[in-house]
Length: 232
Image (cartoon, rainbow, N blue to C red; front, top):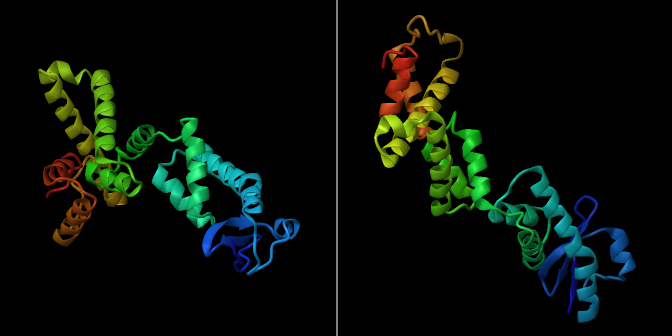
């Protein structure tokens, strides 16, 4: 097994074996393990470095990421790679936190949706969650659970007639609320609930185009314009 020590990055040195990245080591650790660039390392010494130093450090790093905020497996892998950890170490760290149920993509999806639903369209939220590695089925389930909860709070099912219509009604309401908030933010100082917002035709078209790009449906945008006294 051939050692390759990369160029120092900050306080750490990339440690590779047989051309495969393993993880970062401090210069003092390189010296204590008597590692030399292009030198050889036995299987037992490699396992010792892996299990005594690099994997425990990767586990702590991963735990600290999750303490700050929920992360999906895809996000954790990306962060570990950026921190200089190879696949073997990253997988070990992720399996460790998974064994304690610290990775919960449904919880992550619900938390993200709740934080964004007042200002972002469902289309944009779904796109961002997909970027985080959350599956469509998990996103659907997260939306269903949130909408059911909000429906119960608003008693939407009583006016809608049945549960499915109630879910659709509240889903539309959350989309409209987000569209209103988005348009209000874009209007800024021009927003006035008592008078029409004074916008030129070009400004209205730019505002509508911006809302479209954020994923809002045309009917939601027009209703938001009406609520905010913007003549669409």
